[in-house]
Image (tube, rainbow, N blue to C red; front, side, top):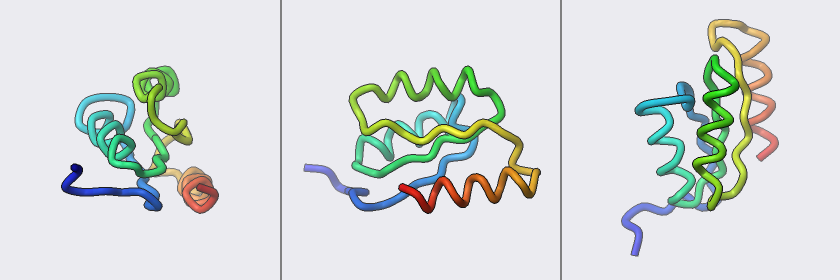
Length: 81
């Protein structure tokens, strides 16, 4: 039994290309969340997506979160899940 379940939840994970961000994204997906992965390195984000092969396919957006245009794209992506 899972202590926490995230089904029907959307999770936006910044820094999902490595380290703590990647671990958080993978755990959220394991708990049932729909996940949006973001970070600056698209190749590393794709690696995270591949590691989540047994989970629902996450949305992946590479970019710089200091950019207002990128923030709008993230908000749009998070709303589509």
